[in-house]
Image 1 (cartoon, rainbow, N blue to C red):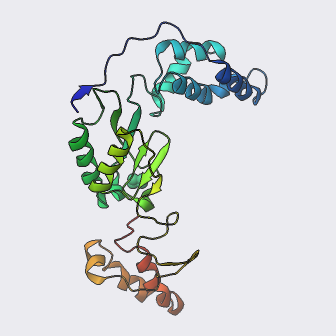
Image 2: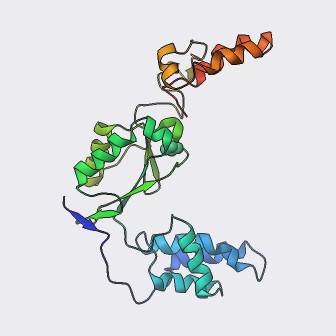
Image 3: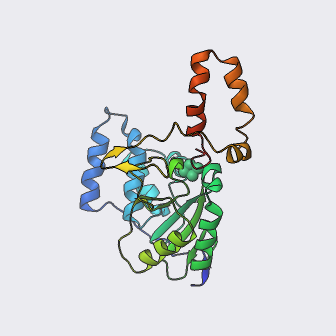
Length: 250
Ligand code: FES
């Protein structure tokens, strides 16, 4: 696929909620006391963005401002503050790739490279066929299953280059994608945790690998904690170290 900058799609000249979204918008506004309808600005902008195909043309922002009897500038301030709101068209699939430290330590560079190689685009670009937009984001709160990508509303976790390529292939085919952990973790159970039926086996008592702990800068901290801590805390020290094993830096 060839790269294209976020394409300058012609701005629509009008916008109004469809019947479904109009009912939802009225329900949101009704949650607040009279005169406080501006409190519903976030959900209304979200509705408008979804109806507009993932971005907010100026007419949609104006419509929401009129709907809530707010000055256009006040609504625009909200739109430009929250990165979830887009003022440029995006692809059918918005790939928000987390590159913050836990994801980076767990291989987000390989995930980014797989996207670049497969799609032929870079951050803030959209494929010519309008399917994918790539975006770099900060922590999305799924560090325990890092690295991860948010695809539209869905989290896809425990990725590597191969799984990322498979994900993009599935999206290109319009097929379903597996959501959540791609390595079959239950929720955010530690990577490598053995499960017996629905019962998780606690492996936290295992001593951390000293070489790996040293790389993570943990080795020097352990002895000092054990020395200064009372006897009972010193006994618990190996358990604490195991929880911060390199497999789960978050
Ligand atoms: S660092 Fe990537 S989800 Fe938190």
